[in-house]
Length: 223
Ligand code: PAF
Image (cartoon, rainbow, N blue to C red; front, top):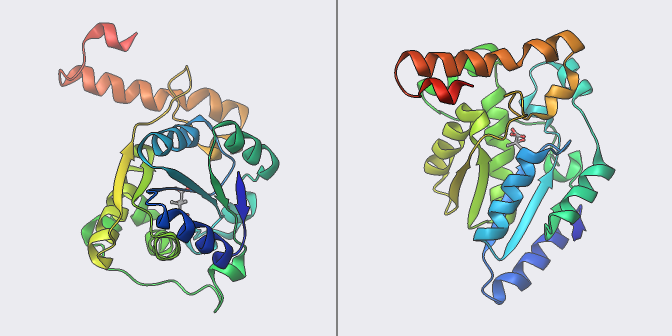
């Protein structure tokens, strides 16, 4: 796996690949990788000739500095996992590479979707996501980009971003990966206390019960 921290080196590699008519798949992450991320890498490997994964903990999407400080970081293990999954390129930029003029966030008009659910509770979060994802799309110019349905609102925001900026990339939504007890895999699960971790799977159980009540699943699927 090639590891680049500089945009210039990454682009020079990608230009060589493009000259060979290779298609580029892109999986943006903030690291602390789990099987959910790795399923996106697999999907990209299936669809594209070259898979680029980025690991960058993006400060402008954290409205809470404590959350940014405590965000799990596990680079050595991430590199091992990506190598095992045969990811072609890891892009590992630092803050100055991504924000050479300081942490400036672009303001987007994502419409009503921006101010409900997560957007309502995390002021500026989606502008931060839009800012960094735009920067990555501009640098990498991928043919495909892979986003998990776990962050469903983020997926909708990214699709809107692609319309606003007329990016050529095709957004590929990817299914949620879950623990055996039903909890959706997330890097932030590492921050749950023992009792929070024990309670968290009830979210999925409640969703399944709701689906049962409206006839979307059968009782056997609840077990
Ligand atoms: O979903 C994430 O991990 C992040 O929001 C993303 C898309 C990598 C942008 O920083």
